[in-house]
Amino acid sequence: MTDLEIAKNAKLKPITEIAEKAGIKEEELELYGKFKAKINDETFKRLENKKSGKLILVTATNPTPAGEGKTTITIGLGQAMDKLGKNTVIALREPSLGPVFGIKGGAAGGGYSQVLPMEDINLHFTGDMHAITSANNLLCALLDNHIHQGNSLKIDPKNVLVKRCLDMNDRALRNILVGLGAKINGVIREDGFVITVATEVMAILCLAKDLNDLKKRLGEILVAYSFEGKPIYAKDLKAEGAMTVLLKEAIKPNLVQALEGTPVLIHGGPFANIAHGCNSIRATKLALKLGDYCVTEAGFGADLGAEKFLDIKCRVAGLKPDCIVIVSTLRSLRYNSQSEAGEITEQGLANLGAHIENMQKYGTNVVVTLNHFEGDKPEEIEKVREFCGKKGCDFTVSKAFAMGSDGTTELAEKVCEICENPNNFKPIYDLDLPIKEKISKIATEIYRANGVRYTPEAEKAIKEIENLGRGNLPVCIAKTQYSLSDDMTKLGCPKDFEITVRDVSLSNGAGFIVVLTGNIMRMPGLPKVPAANNIDIDENGETMGIF
Image (cartoon, rainbow, N blue to C red):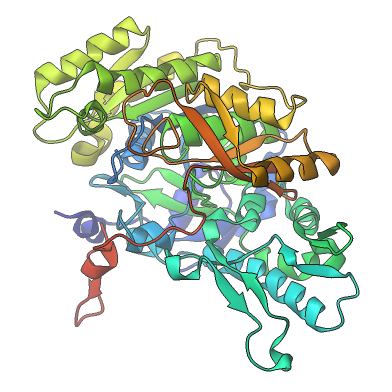
């Protein structure tokens, strides 16, 4: 059966029952039908002084274009720990419509390790993405209106930083002109769109502690510079109040369930290749209060999502992972091997080895799990097991897709064991380092680059950020997910390369510096044959093709 067929054949429990299992009171729920709910602030207040549980981060090696099943493993692991009698809550990101209609076709796990109702989660869910899109575009509308209505702040139309957004892959909107036509249509200027999950508003929602913190952060968004070079913030446009109103429901975490009834919090969805790649701090911290264990994920490979989780999210939220799970597949190892014979070579294994070493550099306890696919050869599995042993790393095989919790029991037992071991977690760089040194630290330590090159635009941007006194923020590097380098064709563990930084921008409200490398785009495009081509609806109103 397909993922959608499995989901539709599942017997979902009422969300009130899932809430009760998680220790959430009925009056703390805001129901969105029978199987979805938002959790209000009363839960946070009630659990404020409760001891937090153990934090398990699931990451991966550099993926193939289809992905390696990291979310599937996260859900399977949570289900298996639940089945072992461990009070476990899963915390995930919300899917973006970009990948749903682009390459992947869905992002709610797969097989017998998925979250439900899968169709709702992959599409409009509880409206969070739309609220974020609206809040961002309200800011843009207020800015353009201010320029049109006399421009008392003297905003330079050629130095506007904030862009409009849409939760869809649409390359035609990357660069546009606004204000065309009659004078009443506003001032003509260059503009563009980014995908919603790459916006600073998304990042802010995921990093905000509460509604007041959200409003403050929104006000601190750097939107433009004046003709005199003075920074203009969202609060100067008096935008933060209305933006917060649009987001007052979106800031509440969403409660759903895994296929086997494990509670799941899904909230926020920044991409890891162009943003910080983690679900919201509110959802993760709530999961840690509700459960003895929280299983969460960070997007793409450990060079992206995990690095940002550890260097940005953990730092902002005061979190420390008790165990890191690295997901890999034989498919990924073959892909990174670039072997014409389709063999797993030392080059492919070197990619896995780099991710193991990277996570160990943070002083954390690491286990590798191989996401099993039908047709995987036992001798190749043993080759990977032996390699992990040489790296001083535990290894398991997971069959979360085909078997749900039963296929992830070994991993669950290993994770519970590892969580009892001490670790010496520490971010890879200090915040007081200059911006370039922080970038260099990640580039050399995590990517294994020889160094970093900067375009004149990037150099100028770094000086402007430092002049604003914001050089002490963490850096969020936008980079291809397919390679440790900034060149997606350099697979395995490339050597003798430099990272090219083509631009740098300040996400002042979010509290980090965005670093654009290579040809990474903040508005992706659709592939030649989009997943949307296979999505349809039948005569009974049943969705088909989401997987």
